[in-house]
Image 1 (cartoon, rainbow, N blue to C red):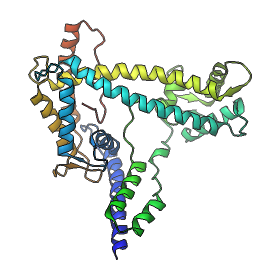
Image 2 (image 1 turned 120 degrees about the horizontal axis):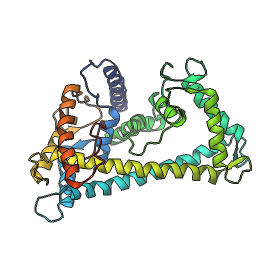
Image 3 (image 1 turned 30 degrees about the vertical axis):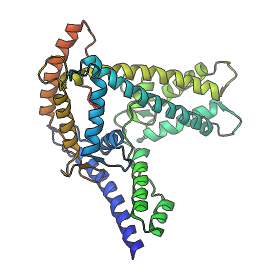
Image 4 (image 1 turned 45 degrees about the vertical axis):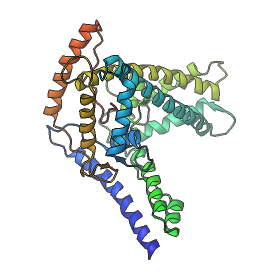
Length: 366
């Protein structure tokens, strides 16, 4: 009977995650014209990942407040409760650099795996035929109407990342065999982690989605990529990557080309994110005195936690409902106010490259 209860609890917990995923997708499709971005499960996962110190896939008000307090203390270099824009940006840069390094390392590891997957005959190198065969599969995946070109007229394919992840049978069986509730919760967490992933900071354009395909291969910016120009560009990319011109891509050649693009993306994202940090600083500096008090920072944190804690029980979990989307009208008002403040700040500093305050993300670390 005890094992049956745990199995039922496990099923209900997993069902909650899958049901919420489907509900979030349906809600996003039915948003009225004046609705803003619908917060996603991935955004909530990002929030939980950032503040979950007890590693239980939940964030309590207490642990959230503790981390926020520690961050303010780190920013407050002079210990006078007057955090400057530079203090704020520097603390964020430290966290951002660690995150970028972690994700860079992960992408490089995935590239090693990709090399092995492309090398179908396992001869230690990627031939042009193997390289183009991979491209053909990517093109066929997005060319859903089979007209030999990819554009917005192609019905969207079902993204591989949105296909339900298989339940870890061994973990589920272990939870059923052992009456300990902790084991059942661990099995739930393991499945949730494989189903809903936090948003990435370091994103590379990929030919596995429309936006990435157009960014990488739509050379004349006409909104479409024909199969002929696609394969021609891949041929050019192959030749450029084949440094020793032997007609094969070694693992090192393939990796070096990717790392070069990856590092340029890291630099671009870092620059953009640090400028966005100044945008956030101006938004948090409510009295516009060019420094952030502990009260202002705490108020920002309280708003953030309240937004995700939709059940109002001082605990953010993956199972509770997502926050409601802010209306586009409200977002526009916020953007206008922030633009005015940031433009004035940039002029004051002589910075002509004012950050784009419209470049919002569903979850922005603060």
